[in-house]
Amino acid sequence: MASPKLTVGVEVTPKKSFASALEWPGWSRPGKTPEAAVEALAAYAPRYATVARRAKLDFPYDHGVPLDVVEQEDGNATTAFGAPDVRFEADRRRTSEADGERLAAIVEAAWEVFDEVVAGAPAELRKGPRGGGRDRDTIVDHVVGADGAYARVMGITGAGADARDAGAVRDLRARMLESIREPSDGSPIAGRKWPPRYAARRVAWHALDHAWEIEDRSEPGD
Image (cartoon, rainbow, N blue to C red; front, side, top):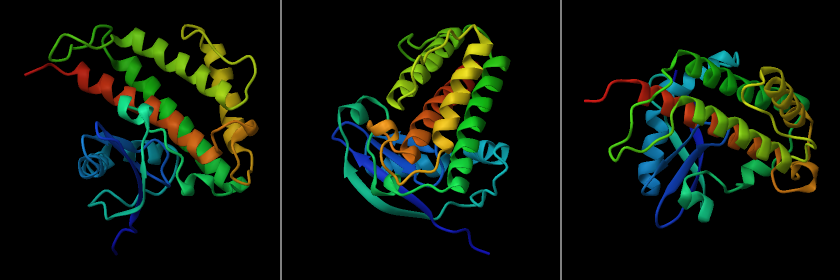
C-alpha cells in the first residue's frame, strides 16, 4: 500500500529556504533553494522516524517519501539566518484535544531524543571545516535558553531554566507542553504570535536540529 503524501510548506529567501512537514512538528530542513530544502526534508525521514515512534505514532515514510508541497511563502530574515519562521495557513487550523495531545507527544519525544543524544556524546565535538561550532554543553545551554525564550513567546510567565537544573528544565518543558495541548481555534497562543501548531513545530525543530548536529559532530571526521 502506498504511503500517503507528506504535506509540505516551504519558506523561501534568496539565501536559504526551509521545507517543513506540516503534520510532523520538528521535521524541517534547510537548503540553498526550495528544491534543495525539499530534498533534504525527504532525506531526513529515517532520522525523524525515531521521533515519531518514540511518540507512539505510526510513521509511514520509511520506504520513500511522496511529497506534496501545498504552501510556498516568502521567508524573512529569520528564515535566511537559519530557522523556520513562517506561519503557514496549515499552522492556523484549530486544534482539538486529540490534536493537542499528538503535538505535545511529538515535542516531548524531540526533547527526549535530544537528551539521549547529549548523554551519549563527548564533551568536545568535532569542529567544522573552519574550526567553528559549539561543544556539547554549550549547545545544551543554548537549547534550554531558547526554550525559555520560546516559552515567553507562548505567554508563559517566569519562563527560563538553568540547563544544569534538571528539575527546572522538566518544569519548563511541562508548562510548554501544557500550553501546546490546550485546544485552540488556531489563534496565536496568549494572543501573541505563535499558534499551537507552529509553536510545536518551532520547539521540536530546534531540539532536533541540535540533536542531529551533535550526532554528526560526535563522529570522527574524514
